[in-house]
Amino acid sequence: MKIAVAGKGGVGKTTFTALLIKQLVEANKGAILAVDADPNSNLNEALGIEVHASIADILDEVKGGKAIPEGMPKDVYVEYRLSQVLNETDYVDLVVMGVPQGSGCYCYPNDLMRKYLENLRQNYDYVVIDNEAGMEHLARRVVTDIDYLFVVSDASARGIRSAGRVFDIVKTVGINVKNIYLVITKVLPTGIEELKPEIEATGLEVVGTIPYDEVVARYDLAGKPLVELPADSPSVLAVKNIFSKLAL
Ligand SMILES: Nc1ncnc2c1ncn2[C@@H]1O[C@H](COP(=O)(O)OP(=O)(O)OP(=O)(O)O)[C@@H](O)[C@H]1O
Ligand SMILES: [Mg+2]
Image (cartoon, rainbow, N blue to C red; front, side, top):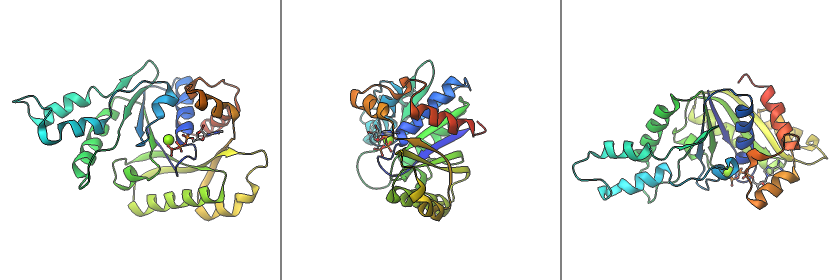
């Protein structure tokens, strides 16, 4: 099962991803691989996992062949190094994609990342991908064949319109997505009634909303992992409710 989370910058993608993983872990659903595809990569902090290197770091390392031991084929070395970027914990494994340095063609790194992820995913029941705001990985088809795509928006008209554009990209690029849902975060007690026309215009179905949760803000401020949020905090309960609606 491949689950991806997308949306504009700062709307709450990483928070939602971490809380969804928390639900999967607590429901004891099987082996989970978390993929941080955001260049700002902070999913590890939300999950409380220390990370040393990303896939892109490895690719940069072998660029030009400097790091490769003499006599070792590049592919073999890359594979060996990639086997070391997997961060394993008792409840979830995490891999950070990172951003390849330099300009020019991204075909080689993209190709490698895609192949690496396709191989890696065979070992897991769930792959959960926290995408970057720019949707590059989706647009470049590094991430394909998604069972659930969650487009996250904050409770603003601009956020919702941006979510609509994400949906347009998905349709244009022709990524194979089985289920696509809108998740609205940081909802104030006044609700989302005013946003109804904007939401309808996107053509997306709202699977649930997440209230503005001061505890989330406090945890982030203190650098505390969001997976440790109390079970009764409003954001955790909201994601639990969303989780219960899915056939996961
Ligand atoms: N439900 C919520 N209640 C209160 N604050 C929230 C909530 N969800 C997210 N935030 C806050 O919003 C900010 C952005 O959240 P988050 O990092 O999850 O967004 P993002 O979409 O992953 O951002 P980026 O595009 O930078 O990766 C953080 O400061 C976080 O604490
Ligand atoms: Mg993020």
